[in-house]
Structure formats: C-alpha cells, structure tokens
Length: 143
Length: 143
Image (tube, each protein chain N blue to C red):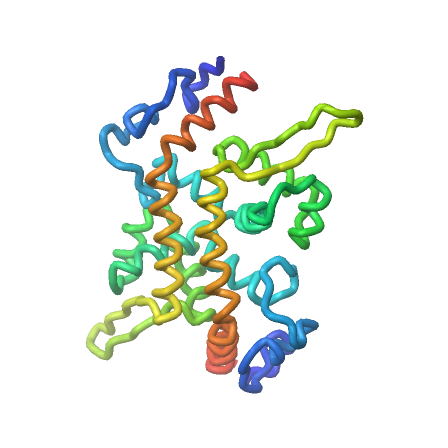
C-alpha cells in the first residue's frame, strides 16, 4: 500500500478524506489546491478531451487510438492514458491471449464525462463559422 | 486588413472558406489541421475552462477575475483572455470614463460554451469521490 502524503492508503470516501485543507467543503475547481482541479486538467488537457471523445465510440487498441487522435505522439498518448486510468475514467483491459491483447475503454464515469465533452465539441464544430468570423475581425482590426 | 495566409481578410462564411484542405468537409476536432482543434484547445486549455466558467456569473474586471481563478498569473490570464476574445467567446468592454473601466464578458457563443463547461465541471465535482477512490487504488496497486 502506498503511504505517500499525496495519496494516503486509507479508503477515500469523500471530500473530508482528501488529505488537504478542504475539510467539509465541497469540491471546487476554482480552488487551486482542490483535487478536482487536477482531475479537470487531466480531462480537458490538450489530448485528454480527444482521447475521451474517441473512446466514446468503443474500445481502442493503442495504435488505433493514436491514428484516431491525429497528431498525438506515442509518449503523449501514453501519458494521457495513464492519467485518465489513474483518475478512474479509462480502463486498460489486458486480454489473456498470446500475444496479449490490450484495449482501452471508458469506465461509467469516463463515459459520462466523454458525453459532456462531446456536447462541447458538437457545439463548437457547429459554430466554427462564428469563431472564424471573429478571428478575421480581430486580426483585421489589429492588422 | 490583414492579408496573412492563416487569416484571410475575405469574409468567412463557413468551412469552405477556412483556407485549408477542409473544403466541403464539416469541421472535425480530430483532424489536427482543422481550425476547430485550436478553438477547442483555447476553450479547454489550463485556464480557458476556468475563465469561461467564471464569466458565466457575469462580467469581471481583470483583477477580480484573477482572484476568482485562483492560481492564474497575470501573464497567463492576459493570454487566455486574448485567445478567447479572438475566437469570439469573450468581449473586452472598455467603458468611457476617467479612468476607463475595462470589463470582460461572454458573447452569446461564449455563454453557450461556458454552459457546456459548467455541465462538465458539475459532473466532475459531484463525482470526485469516485476519482479519489480510483487514484488510491491505482497508487496502492503500484506502491
């Protein structure tokens, strides 16, 4: 069992066990030391959004996921998957066969999170005309 | 008017005018050169989420916003606001008085985007017990 200060080995049942100054307060991403801040950063990081959104389609093997998330390096995809696995959003599923088959899939929490992210992505993709018009106007005013 | 290749000065009315290889295709954040990818990164970047979520409460002056988004530096807040302003999510509103009063507020697109982000934040804050339990289990298995 890990005994590190950051991740006590005692069962964690809620905010009061988070081991810092949050006590009875609810989790709050606006507070820089709240553990929800790092969880939010893992989800909304450069690659976290795209990995979660991709896995909403179903399980992926590493290389297929890397092709789906266009532009991600092997190292960054590996780091992103580890962070999401540690936060309970992604499961690394090793199927016992020769050679072993490894797939990544969402947990129920990961699927709910990915659903919210896809809502955001859908909104953005559907209104990129507004974004591009704003960029043109902004750049023209400063050109 | 700016004539840079990245941001043509011609009016942009949709994906076909985005000036790259996207042609008639819909915007797709999974494609690394799609302009929706950078817009997504600005929204979901380390500080973009928190700035948009904060501004959903109403307009903020710079220093008040900096206090609300606990931990952000002056430089990072300034960069984040510029990127969100350029993408049409935030308006920098200069009120003519002495001294001038500058406030930041959301556009309609910014408010819709912030709504989706708050859905995500609410889900995460409400299920941090699952995240913390997963972190403990992950660290214990590797301790």
